[in-house]
Image 1 (cartoon, rainbow, N blue to C red):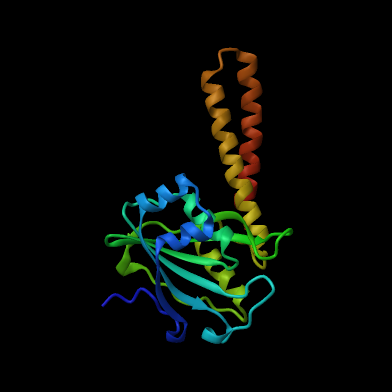
Image 2 (image 1 turned 45 degrees about the horizontal axis):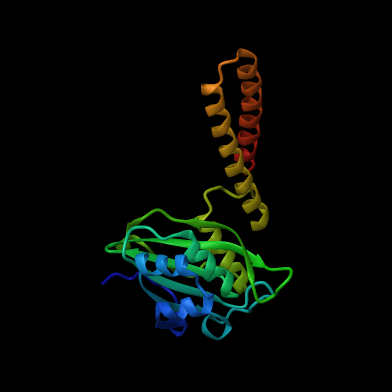
Length: 222
């Protein structure tokens, strides 16, 4: 038997949530509703990680952590679906996406809104690769409180290595800057290929080299 979850039994919630409940709660427009219909088979609220279920203290940032298992009709899920769920639910959510015999983990790095404490602002998403469900393990990261557990899940999926004692927020910002630089480098490389004027090519190339140095410095800052 596949043991996908290695979480405390007390935390098991295992409640299937009808998709229409999400439509209503999210006040979904036609586009979002159609995405749910086309891509999502069903959603199971699998675990609730809270003080009463795993005996770890909440923090102002993280009161609970939810684990949602989403079964898909196709091997893709629009980010808009996750973004709308994450904005509406005032807790971090670890998503376990399953399509046939494969699965992947997804989690948002999000922070409480400065305007509305009951809402979160999504900064970025981090995810694993698709792999056989039999190879996925969802366990409990070590930590003294629920915020540490949440950060543990995010760090596991971060594509950049954190430097020693680097705060998660700093690592996330560095990763976002890395991704921004990669897009700028790609844009400059295309400009150089298409540019006919020699002087402009030189100008673009100088900027490209500078961006590449910045990228290398950020990537090595761990």
